[in-house]
Amino acid sequence: EKGTYPHFMLKEIDEQPPVIRRIIQEYQDDHDNIKLDPEVRQAMRDTDRVYIIAAGTSYHAGLVGKQFMEKLANVPVEVHIASEFSYNMPLLSEKPLFVFISQSGETADSRSVLVRIKELGHPALTITNVPGSTLSREANYTLHLHAGPEIAVASTKAYTAQIAVLAILAVDTAKAKGLDLDFDPLQELGIVASVMESLTDQKDEFEMLAKELFAETRNAFFIGRGMDYYVVQEAALKLKEISYIQAEGFAGGELKHGTIALIEDGTPVIAINTQANVNLSIRGNVQEVAARGAKTCVVSLEGLEKDTDSFVVPQVHELLTPLVSVVPMQLLAYYAALHRDCDVDKPRNLAKSVTVE
Ligand code: M6R
Image 1 (cartoon, rainbow, N blue to C red):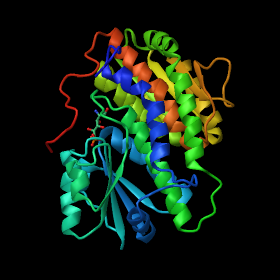
Image 2 (tube, rainbow, N blue to C red):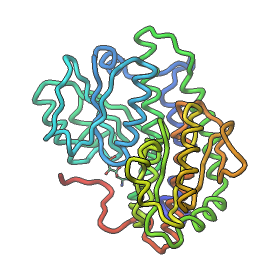
Image 3 (cartoon, protein in one colour):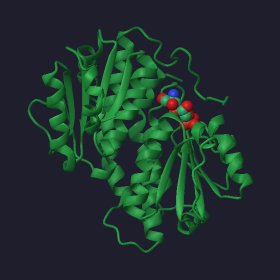
């Protein structure tokens, strides 16, 4: 039930801190170590390459998950859009492990890949919010997101739950492989939950920003580099699916290869800036679009901010920034849709779970 909330989406955005805390609890043993199904641990240890299969927002979480698994656990990862995979199957490694990421566990595009790879005899792990779902039942292993029912068509708490579980899985794999890590995901996720709370407490700010940026526009661009590039793709999907504003997320460096031609007077360009190693380059991109008339908005991580930035997100571990930088994006999309009188929870032409291919 929505309770006092006007929309499920807003309620689910607010539920993100408690969901992250629940994940910490569920994946922690009595000695504050990671608790994980030993069979999943073994499967992650045995594989020579992980193939992540997902759609929409879950695909965007997969892009972040790849960074965790490669950077922390030294496991090579490919991330594939489910609907493309079956027709465009890549050459597989010798010991592939398929990881299906799906809030609903019912996405038909993902299921058809699962059926196919089972025929080939490969193991599958499903990461889902619905443990009894088709993708969960038909895979060899399941990890549960513990996010509680997600009702709004626009996925919010499932995305952050997926990223949190992927971080835990990557660190667990690293430990199982005997790698030395200076990163305790359970502790760092605790910090993330508090930061998320401070963001959801500032809704008025995002409502004002959304009015400034999106009240009249027909299109909007999001830019980022590195980790932030994955989050801007999710930001654009969120905005377009509920506000019907045409939106795209671009890698900052790609602007000059074409997209910058679209910038006109007043075009909103939102930049996410959480990665120290690309701070200067993304700021350069913001200047380039501002010089061509764009209405710019920079959301920075604390420590990288400038006075002119629209919003500063308190610091979290730099691998976990997507968990916090996405919250302002979700709220911007929500208020954009609200002020354009769109049906926030049930956008036109969309279903919560897409059970047709
Ligand atoms: O249930 P799933 O995670 O498999 O769903 C995948 C996509 O259909 C879903 O994420 C969709 O993109 C959302 N509406 C995005 O907000």
